[in-house]
Length: 150
Image (cartoon, rainbow, N blue to C red; front, side):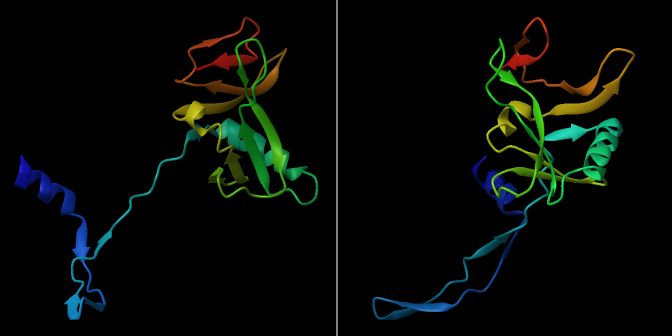
């Protein structure tokens, strides 16, 4: 297992020559430096075409200075967490950014762990309209469906 595991870990690495340096009066060549190829990270959640269309509508009538829409999960409701969608005027480097045809969609950094693997959709019927979430992390919801727990 030792040698085979070592080969699997270093298969995507290429040695790159490093600068020479002196240590304790002798010169060493740093040829052990490696470059690791990073793969693209999947988005925290999936937006359906309905959700993207609704985000496009929101961005079309957004206040001046708006750079996108942000999803967060503030502590609220009977079960502890609720979904909240708001306009964003300034990007937070800690937030997850998902670029959509409609514009930038942000996921609050403190909410990402509660939302990984979720699907966000926009649904309308005769009585209601709103974003609907299929969240595999939710362990329960309140009776009215406004909040969830993880």
